[in-house]
Image 1 (cartoon, one colour):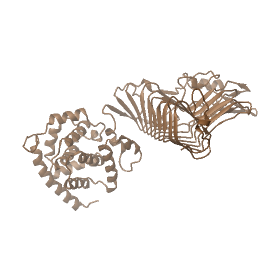
Image 2 (cartoon, rainbow, N blue to C red):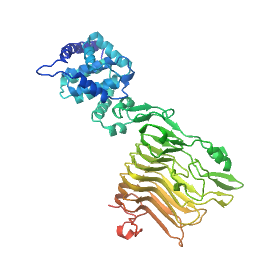
Image 3 (cartoon, helix red, strand yellow):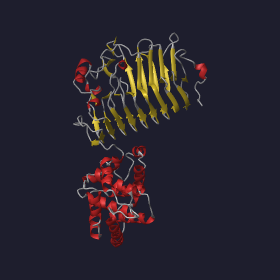
Image 4 (tube, rainbow, N blue to C red):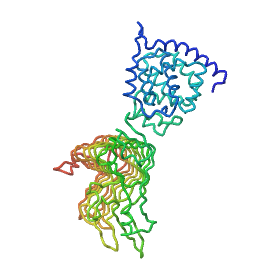
Length: 542
């Protein structure tokens, strides 16, 4: 940090620059041979039509202080239309409505005393980091650049007391904004040490957007985009093993709970959940609404449909219907119904999200027309037990999966210790960890993932089991399977097919198996098991 004497020297140096700038400011609005007049009406129109929303300057009553100081940077090198446009977008986005021409007049009054007042305002409202980033972006968009301008900017940073350690982050943020690199911005969420990442969110979202911090009361917001930021969304508490609620009593208790969030009821065109925590969440349903989940965590420890009670020396299993939208007919699988997963979405993207600790009898995710990007699934499982009460079988499951996606993609995503298991009494059970229809899977890693289908209480069944089941032009490319397996429990009299990947009307390339896993098959509608045509079993596929 500079001494008072050094800061005074900086202020005096800037004051001399301000005297020269005031001369330049007086020429704006006048046409000369070398520089045409600034069309302030055009500049203001650009600011109004393409303003930058959610700038922290909005909360500052002396907006002209911040903006006039930025304006001196633009004019230090005579300025240009790009600089005026950028300033106008900030000004109108922050609610400064007096227009850029009046801002020029305000900047002309900057002298040594007023400079101290202006910098005090910037610091008082916590805007110094925003000023550094905005000025760096301003410098980037200007057509002419020189070292004198940079020295002038650094002098202002010194007066504001900007720490050297912050500058690297400011430079990174300025580059992201100047390049409109939304991927880089969201890749760095929760990684900034000094900057408040949400202070710069306005550069990355739609102009007609509203930011809220909870779901309550936002159903009727009609903006093009509503962003739910940093919210913790907790589901209804379900009875667990320690609650000692069983059978019909448990079903009745659950029937009184509101166990789903239906996002289709929201009126906005696009609903964005940003950096939200879905804690012990129940069902999330959005069949039509366009939804984006960005940098969210989905965490649940429920073990639904597998509640065990020890009584009279034996174990008894109970099942229940968690939602009126689900069937209570235990002779059929829940996947036969449209609403059949913890998360059921028809037009959604999941980016940089984490899913962890899901369990129970429902699939974790059923989605279509969407993408999963740079996400992680950790310790998620689906377990279907047909259930026994006093030795009476309540039915079986004929088909089951943990994840289902149609008309989408899964890219740069990791699956760790996730599984799909079905225990049935009967024949012809089919299970897969991931069911993909017209979906591309690329650059993903599967570690210690499994799919298991078998009979109950030591019985054997005729089963088909796959880790990945692909259909309708789905593809797998550049993926890694490490300690993964797909297994079916059977006896010599029953037919069984057990593979890591089953592919119908799709293609698989560059798949690496780091450890022994099951066979890879590539089938067709006519010949379902063409292992000999692929010629690959338990070795790397080049």
